[in-house]
Image (cartoon, rainbow, N blue to C red; front, side, top):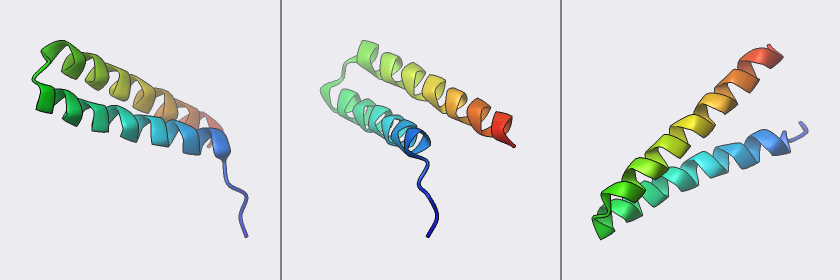
Length: 56
């Protein structure tokens, strides 16, 4: 069985959580939280992709 890369798994969950929070912000019709969570989500996603590319 392979070892689970825990830091990358947590970052992936964090990205998913940010986009879930975007949906929740849309439901509450709060534009500032929508923009905030989109920016944070894409920022974390960029960090994950940069770390993944650096390991290859």
